[in-house]
Every structure is written in C-alpha cells, then in structure tokens.
Length: 314
Image (cartoon, rainbow, N blue to C red):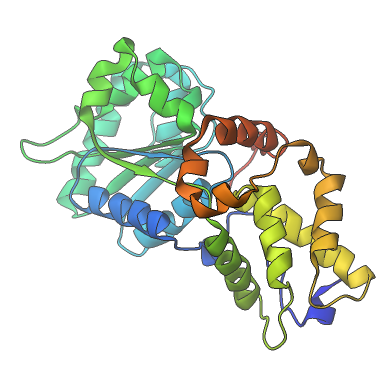
C-alpha cells in the first residue's frame, strides 16, 4: 500500500527474521563471530541470550545460512516445551536419521553412529535449541549428556542454546552446574542505542529499496527510539504502522506525531519512556538500570511472538 509512495520494493519492517535485514551492531557482530568461532573450533556448548525482540532468531537464521554454505548439518528445535523422549524424536527427525525404535539407548546409538559418519566425512553437525529458557531440568541434563558424544580430541555435536535472560538465571542453579561448566562461549544481544536505532531504520529502508529524500525525519526516529526502548521488534512495529499512517496523510518525511499516535495505539505511552537529559547523557547506565529493565519487561510482554506451529526445516 505505502511501498510505491515511499519508493520501496518490499516491506522494510517485516517481523519475520529475514537474515538479510540483520543489523550488525558491534554486539551483534561479536555474537555472530563468537557463534561461528565456537562451531568452527568444535567447542561443544555455546549460549546465545538476550531479551525478547533483540534479534536472536534473525541472528540464528544468519548463522544457519553461513552453516549451509559450509557443508554443515543443522537441526533447529524451536519447540522447547518437550520431554526427554520428544527431544530425541525431534533431533533424529531434524537430522533425517531413520530409527524405528523408541528406545532411548537405541536412538542414542543411532545418533552417535551417524555423527561419527559425518565427522569422518568432514562435516560439522550443529543442534540449535530456541527458547531454551523453557527447557526442563531433565531435558537440560539430556542435552548436557549429548556433549559426551565425542572423539578423543573433538566434540561430534555442536550445541547452541538460544534464549531469553531467564536462561542465564536457570544455568546458575546448582541442578545444572555440570552443564554450566561445559559452556565454552556465551554470546549476547542487547537493545539499540539512539544512534543505532537511527542507523537500523535507515539500513532496513535501504535494503528495501529506499533512495533519495529521507522517509523518517531525525526527530521521528528519536521518537521511535524513546517508545521502543531500542528493541528491534518494537522498532519494526512502530515504523511499519508509521509508514501506513504516513501514507494515509501523504507525509514525507514522517514526523514525530505520527510515531506518537502509533505508540498510543499500541499503549506504549503507558510505559514510562526512556527520556530525560541524564538518560541521554548516560545511555549505558539507563540500559543497566532497574527501572529500565522493569519497563522493558512490561513493554515486551505485548510483543512476544506466539508459539510457532510449523517452521521450515533448515
């Protein structure tokens, strides 16, 4: 609807985790590099944590694209609410390993044999579990035991646990101390700063085909940052609906009032925005403050994605 008016070839703020739109902040780039390094060097266990909406799934999709160009075999488990039997069923199904029995020991033997064959063929095998903060303690223990599948020098299976900050808290508990000790790399995502929010919006518009006159005014992008708290998913929502409203009002560049109207529509104005001179002077302190984290949780509760029922197999 608005694409022709703004000179766009596609939707720049789609909520789907398209790896083409991954915005490489320093922290995202460090996380992606850490994931690649950990898998290449067969570290075994890696975690990726960050608040909901900060780009973990998009980052994982970029990682999967990279892995598919390197002869890697991958399994992406997005339904973390499973028991131990379902865990092995899902893993074997994702790797296309035939196994008629439901015996866990037989399934484990099949998996180990298949991993050895892949290792001898020079292939890397990666298991990625999304929303890992929801895994039960028995399932976490089974995941830990999967790292025992190894040669005398290297791990046969590389495991990435991706989840919200609650995953880090869960891994601090005594029940999972053995798993915690096996984590070789910890990667993180974080909210965008004000400057990064500007760059993020401009970059996504560029990828979608924007050129010439700006689509969002600098003041409008400041307003997006204030109400989104730097969360990319909420930035996308605000910008998408601002483009729709801007088209209706034939406004280019989009001004702050349109963004404010969208924020009110989605009740983002009910959560205290991160404003004030002190906040602008010390953004790092803002993101670490208790008030910000509380407000962030309230805002993000409105934008959590519903559980996926289907996902394209990678």
